[in-house]
Image 1 (spheres, rainbow, N blue to C red):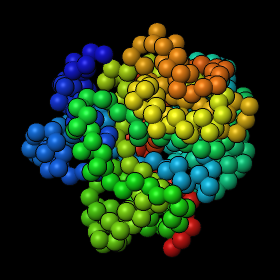
Image 2: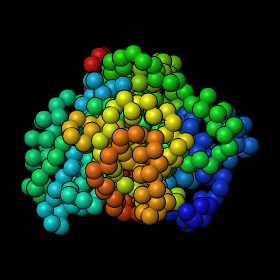
Image 3: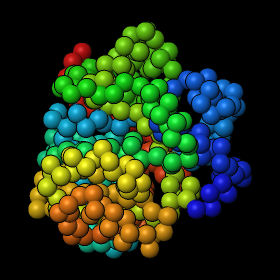
Image 4: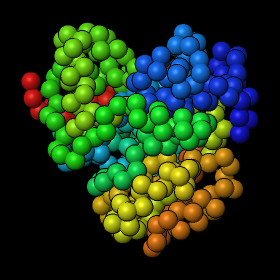
Length: 348
């Protein structure tokens, strides 16, 4: 990593304090600037100004994502696409505007594109009517997600001291409960859309987007977060902040092994970005972010030590990320615009 020497779009630099600020927002994405300042030893105005520079430079976003608890109501899947020669970029641009296509990655492997899809109503219709309408898509393979034991919001920069991390986690907002996620109304959907665009939007701004009062928006957001229907996280442009390589690992492991080890993976394998279970012979997908491609074997060894019985059957390097959780990215890996995600509406 060039650590504190990564170049930002506006010609500035990302210094060590910027990394600490980003780390703090990963742990407490909606905490007030004043409270963050108490942990970081800086005033609220300085933090807000630095964050705005990082955001405008496309180096970070605070955004919303579907919670794991929403899976019973919200079909999510990975979709691998094989495109005709020379059409990958064109297909990616068209797919990027679809709210149901959360992420798009160009990978080295059997298929060129790996999509993360969250379709509120009908996955079959998405595949037959939407993907099937692209003449340049020659083939596709679908893998339905059955569980997410390790969410991407758990990955962080490790730029803060352990005691700072403990304090920030405590102010990070309500933890999802164990019950069923709450139904999502039209007003809730408007709040989620506003959060996707700006995860630090005030309750007044969220209320304005949903046509409700700030107090009502605060209560609705609390209910969505506690119910696990949606989460809020701070994503960073990994290539610009010292993680130039990423890999998607497909493999097999007993689900109970993965569930038991999930709590320890963050500390034991800091490169692990995300892990989910899927329906199929390969029942696990793991995403790792790397300082260098050569680190992949060592990361796999640490994963195998924590996940007895893990058998990695395929490794696909990520060549470019076009879209990440609703955030469209440019060729240099910076965030440029938002396509708000949608959850299934069930109540008014």
